[in-house]
Length: 418
Image 1 (cartoon, rainbow, N blue to C red):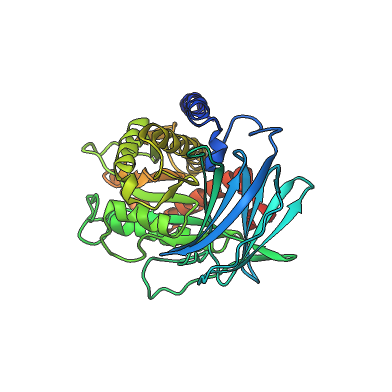
Image 2: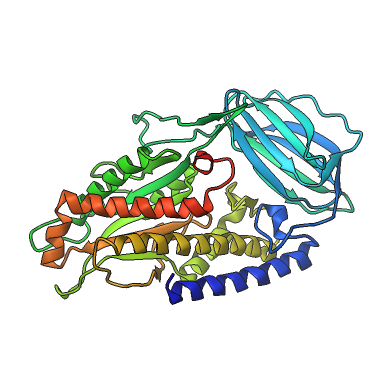
């Protein structure tokens, strides 16, 4: 691991600690109440009780609200055959409470409750179709209880999509295990430029948009052949897609990683080598301001937490925590990819670079941008035109993905079970 990447991680860790302390002062609880990480065991020794459960159908989602005595940590898991959403609420018990009747919902069949590990409350939502719950814990208002809010979107949530075009067939991939199934990790691949935007052009007329599309398609095939991974392409042909729409495609398909592929250029033909970028702190700050300005008009959850319904200070800290965690993950992922590319190509910079590229600004999707070589360098232009080199770059990126998920595969994913 290079020193600059480690220094960046250390700085992010200090920022995260400061923001967690702010949340505890502001709300009397930890960031884990919003699905975000805490330093050390969260809310240890504080058993909670659920005193009331309400349910109702709303436009676009079915909502369950659990009145709860104090903040809690929770884990979620999606299961298939049949479709279920499971939420395990740590150190919590259900008092003498009657469950509400099931709303007239297009997605929820019913709710069952049980005890897990002797002290955790397990909620099992039987579903008519797959749906990923959106969860937040709200602080008390007017002397009432905390509220754990579970929204189940009526639109469902398919695991895998190969492209955003409606004519591309969906691929479903799950690993059966006992009574359930585990989801694939979704990797968004973003070949830069396209359509009216050719990107950089080499001396032989090589267009960046064509080279990076070829690399992206090779990477797609490699990822599709890897158990536990599923690709999503922002474009799979010569189309122009605005920068913001590229990240929106990744978010819409619930991508776990985002990889943008490019070829560098410079006015001096001698410039050469590959680079890997992730988002800079300045880029993250500007993006945070944009998200906060739009938070009242957005139903999006960031890092498991909704920005709506909180005052500006708390919403800002929630977003900062999500971004900090994402930046830490992006740096780690970028460093692993850079090491693998360094095995097959000269590196322009031996450290992960950071910049404010728009495609790297998803606050909760670890994102990197790979500059595969300098198309403005005649020797590297020739390499970029080679299908063999294109595949080597794609293979190096895949190796970085595998290295990252070997260390960080989330619970409930197929990759973690292999």
